[in-house]
Image 1 (tube, rainbow, N blue to C red):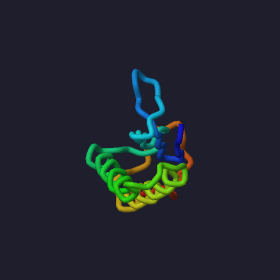
Image 2: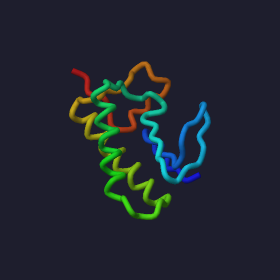
Image 3: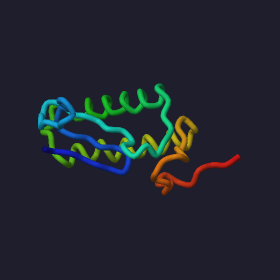
Length: 108
C-alpha cells in the first residue's frame, strides 16, 4: 500500500473498512495529527481537509506514486505550521508527546 507519513500527517492510498485499512489506489485517506499534539477546532480541521483536497486536485491525472503522496504530506505540514503561527491551532499541553516539533509555544 502506498503511504506517506510525516510527524502530523499520514496519507494512505486506501480505504478504512471496519477499522482496517484496505489498499485502494483510487482513494486517499488522511489522518491529521495522530498523536494529538495540537488542539483542533472543527473549522481548523476542515481547513486542513480543504487544503488536502486542493493539493490532491493539483495532481489529477498524474500516476499515484510515493513521491506524489510525500509532496502532499510535506505541503500539509507547512500548512499546519502556518496555522499554528497564526494562532488558528495551539499545542495540546496535555498530549503525551510534548516535543514542540513546530516551534516553541507562545506564552503570554
